[in-house]
Image (cartoon, rainbow, N blue to C red; front, side, top):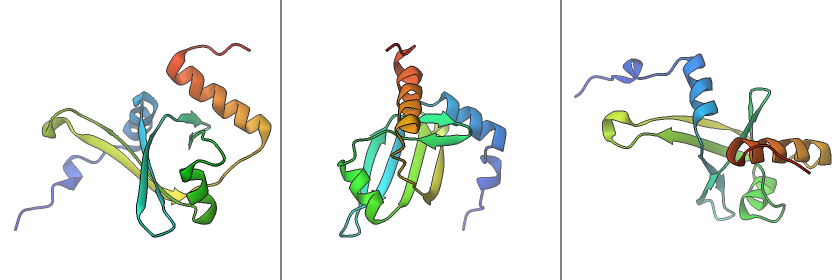
Length: 119
């Protein structure tokens, strides 16, 4: 049986923060009503150390999260086996509908991917 090498590849907390800040796309996994995973590629914002997503209220992922807030997010990188790395985050999602917060998140996502936001 092989030896566990995980300790050689674990990122430090600072490396994780930098990796999340630098990365572009996250894969969000929620749970469908029949228990199967529902995975979608998402753009995201990092606000006050938290990862935020923006989506439509009636999207499948929002429907799933209203029923079961269990979520896993995977942010990964690498083009060859030797360069693969990623961060997987398990948690409980919170749907926020406050208009000011939604605007802040929307602007942050917009600026992260497309540049400065103007009204």
